[in-house]
Image 1 (cartoon, helix red, strand yellow):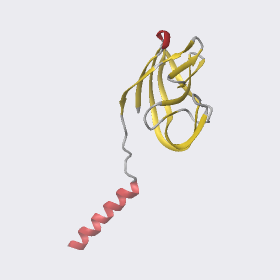
Image 2 (cartoon, helix red, strand yellow):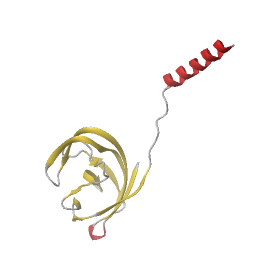
Image 3 (cartoon, helix red, strand yellow):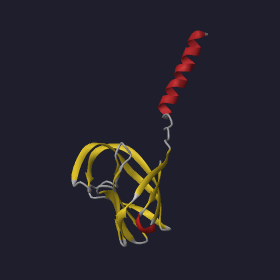
Image 4 (cartoon, helix red, strand yellow):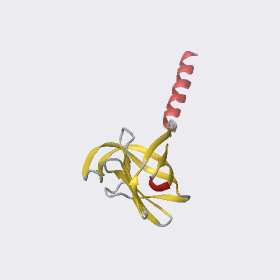
Length: 139
């Protein structure tokens, strides 16, 4: 989970939390109009608000839901809030585009939390059976 706050242009308040996952694929950078094929932090989910309105993640130009670079620079994000569509991408700086909004933003990564997946049941079963077999062989 990546928690970010944005100081947006003209008093707009955007607070967002992202679930990101490193995924190999082809991503579009609309600020520079080129595609990259490599592992990037794809945005899987987004929660938060823009000026008090809940945000909803939308598909981007490249068919993904947006992405951060491995350096945690936000390269592409499309979302909606209050029935309007917005986009954030680098255009010499991070830029927020949407109805009544067109200006630079300052992105601050507030925190990053990671989750450790639980071991699979088969691994636990194998360890347990190995322990029982070892104990039985010892006695």
